[in-house]
Image (cartoon, rainbow, N blue to C red; front, side, top):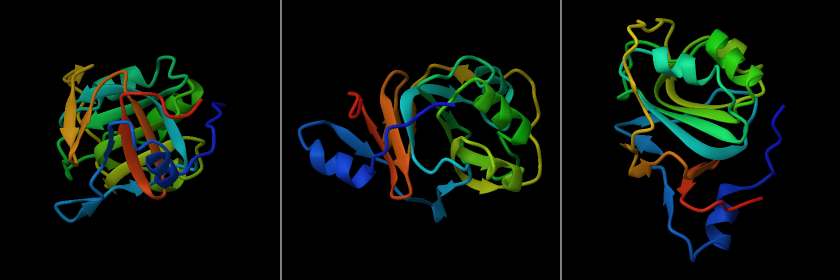
Length: 170
C-alpha cells in the first residue's frame, strides 16, 4: 500500500504562492470530475497517456511499478466507453499506483469504491473500450485549463486537482 502524506489542495495553493501551480477547471462543458476510488486524497509524479476509446496503454501502464505515481489519461472526454474498470484498477493497486485521473469514463463503480486507489473521472458507463493497441505514452496533455506533463506533480482531494512542476510535499 502506498502512503500519501495528508494534504488539502487549498492549503497547498495558499502555502506555495511563489510556485507556478495550475488548477484544473472543475466543470468541463457541464461535466465535473468525480471521485470514484476509496482513496480520497492522492498525489504523485505524473505519467501520461493519450488514448481515445482504447484502454490498451492504460492497462499496460497500470501493470508496471507505479510507486509514487499518478496516471493521467486523456480519453478525449468520450462518453461512449470506459477506459478503466475493476480489473485494471485492481492491477493499479497491486503495482502501487497512487491514483488515476481520466478525462473520460470508468466502469464498475461499486468495485472501484472499495479499492485503495485515488480515481477521478468524468463519468461512469457500463460499456468497455475496444483494445487495438492505440495510444501515446509520455506526451503532454491539455484539458481543463491545465497542461499535464510527465514528471510534474499532481495533487487531488475533494476540493479539486492541482498540478505543479515542483514537488510540494515530502
